Image 1 (cartoon, rainbow, N blue to C red):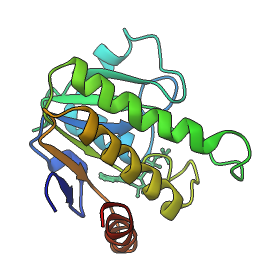
Image 2 (cartoon, rainbow, N blue to C red; image 1 turned 135 degrees about the vertical axis):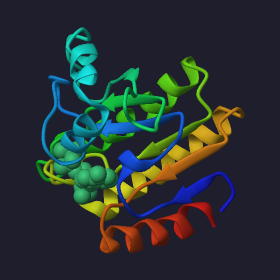
Image 3 (cartoon, rainbow, N blue to C red; image 1 turned 120 degrees about the horizontal axis):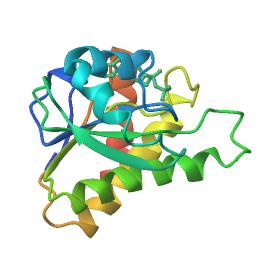
Image 4 (cartoon, rainbow, N blue to C red; image 1 turned 120 degrees about the vertical axis):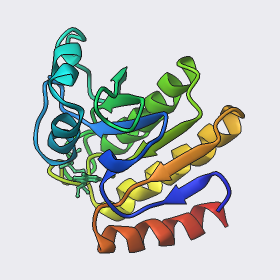
Length: 171
Ligand code: ADP
């Protein structure tokens, strides 16, 4: 699959330049993957995050990874799903784009994504996954230094959706 990987499991276990956190606007921790990342990174992560003054929906900010095997965490905030007519797709595209941009600005070559917005924020998994794959394709064209983009679906049903979308978009 070239530079794209799909790895089902816990994103906090990956040794990679950056894992992406599906954070909330406060950047001070939450549930889901955000909670798992904060637990695994240790209290230094919230200490650094609290200096960042939060994060707008669709933006991304970077911190160190602290006790994680990943060197950095790129915190992004995806949109809450309100049915799709409130700019959700544009905001989710922007969140992925900003993550790749922040990775590039920091000289990173490998990055792993959870299914941003597709948990508590309610974005339909197949649509969220399509956006993730489209932005990965664009980023690989834009940033030749990018060596590895990993997608980390948590459940086996999400894994099946990622595999399907990969075929659709990279075929
Ligand atoms: P959001 O608020 O952006 O919807 P969530 O954390 O609720 O974020 O969910 C995003 C996705 O991350 C969901 O598909 C959820 O199953 C998944 N997830 C939860 N914990 C982990 C983890 N440790 N590693 C990877 N994915 C995870």
